[in-house]
Image (cartoon, rainbow, N blue to C red; front, side, top):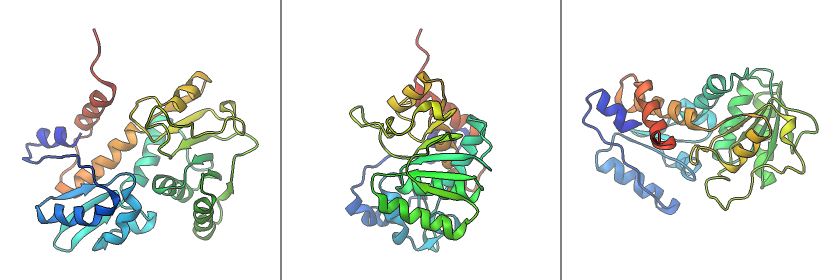
Length: 260
């Protein structure tokens, strides 16, 4: 999407993907700066690690506690979080969900789960249910919400009744052999009308497929990817992101060309 956007605006820029071991992240950030990169995007598992590696943290990174976008400036490496706003924008656009007053089950309390949960709380959902393999991480997020958003009710574990949305913020589903992120013995798809998976490749995870077969409205994370990327584009270039161009490039890449 970025290279398509650069081309559309006539910018002689290039976006490349680099695999970096977490233990080499600090060196990689310094190397990118030394080589004259304008900035970086960071994905799992780097978003939390990078917080302590920035020279400056934008208010967004401070608020959500994770960095997914880096901009190299005269101040050094400036860390931003463009994920949080992208989550709720996607929910409103793709699922037509009114976030305020909703009851939401969030699966995962890692970097993506933490950002999503805190953003939903800031939008004044009525109730959050947080499920995570490591309970202590979920407890930490619950404590943050109780401190900063006391009007939002938060519980650890699966709800007994229905919710308005189930959101998968884990990485389960990226690989074919992954276990399901949802324990169907404790929660059934009939308990929710909508399911959102932050994963966008594969376009339909087994989790989303099962939810769709059960009658839920389902959406993957493509729109979230678009909106966080568009904001990053604007941070790096100072130009308005050409959203239609970026969306088309993403859809062609993830869904592929139409087969004759």
